[in-house]
Length: 453
Image (cartoon, rainbow, N blue to C red; front, side):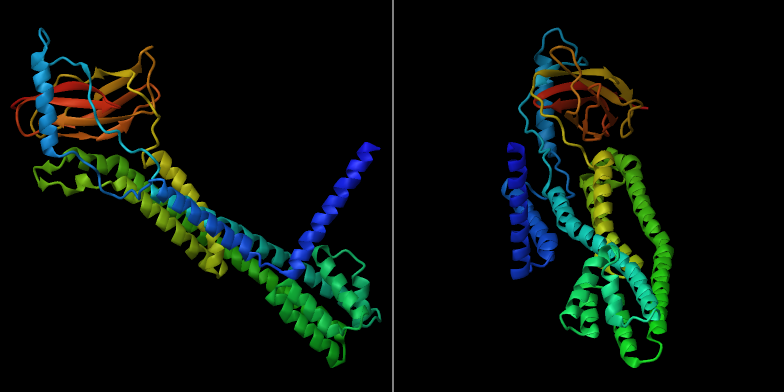
C-alpha cells in the first residue's frame, strides 16, 4: 500500500509540475532564445568578470626578460661565493638556494575568454542545429500528409473530412498539429484558416508556401486532388535538391577543417623548429639587435588559431548552409579542438605545485668547450630529485647564462623522469661561462668554456 501511495503521490506531483510549466508557457510564452542565448551569455560574462576580479590578466606576446645589470650582479655574487669555497674547483657544480620570484603559471584571462565564448555560443549552436533537423523532418512528413490527403480526396472525401480522417493516423511529429487543425475544423473554423494555423505552428517557410498553394487549389474547383498530389511531388523534389546541394557543399566544409589543421601544423613547425633558433640567438647577434627574442610567439600563435577558428566556423556556415548562424557549431568545434591542440603542443602546460624540498643535478653536458658566438655541441641536461631520490616531474625550470650568450629555451617543464635540457650559445668573449638552472628557489650551475679557434 505504501508503495502504491508513493507512486500516486509522485504522479500527482509530476502532473502538477507539468501543469505549472504549461501555464507559464501559455501566460508568458518565453522565447527559447532566453535559454539558448541570454542565459549562456550571462554565464560567460560572469565567468570573465569573475576571472578578472580574481587577478587574472590578459597574457600578451611580450616575454619578461631579466635586465643585463641583474644578470651581471647575480653572476658576480655567484663567482664570489665560488671563490670563497675552500678546496673547491671553480668548474664543479653545487646546489644553492636563492630568493626568486616564482613565475605566474596561472591560466590567463585570454584562455578564460576562449572558454566564455564557447559557453556563450554552444547552446544556441546546438539548438538551431536541432531545430533545422526537426523542420526538415516535418517537411518530409508534410509531403506524406499531402499525398495521403490527395488519396482520400480521390476516394470521394472533401478536404475537411480528409483532414479529420488523417488526424486519426500516425503522422509522426506532425500528428499533434494535424489533430489541432482537425479539432479547429470541428468547431467551425474553415479549412483554409485551420491549414494556415497548422503551417504557422510548423515554422517552415517551405510548408507555408505549399499550404497556401493547397488552400488556393481547394477553392479553385476542378481536380483538387491532382493539384495537391502535384504539390506533394514538387515539395519532395525541392527537399531532395536541398539535400543534394548540402551534400555537394559538405566537401567545402571538410576543406575548411583541413585548412585549419594545416595552419596548426605550420604554426607547430615554426614553434618547434624556427623559433627556438631565434631564441638561441639571444638579445644580440652578429646581425645586430635581435628584437624577436622578446616576443612570445607561442602565445601569439595561440590567439591566431582561436580567432581563425571562430571566424572560419562562421564562414563555413555561410557557405555550406547559407546562414552564418549555422556556422556557430563549427566555430565551437574548431575552437575546442584548437585549444586542446595548443595546450598539448604549443602553449606551456600548467606546472605542478612544488616546494623547495628537492635538488637539481647536472647529469650531462657540464664543462663543455666551445667557441665564441657559437652553440655548444651537446645540450646541458639537469634532473630534479626529491629527498627520497624520486624524480620531480611537471615542474618549471628557468635557465640563464652569464656573463653573456644565450640559452634556448629560457624555461622548460621537467618530463616524467624529472629531466630537462637546455641548448647553450656562448658569448663573444673567451673564458668561463656559467649556465644556471633554477626552480622554486633552488639553483644549480654548470660551466662551459669558450676558447679561441
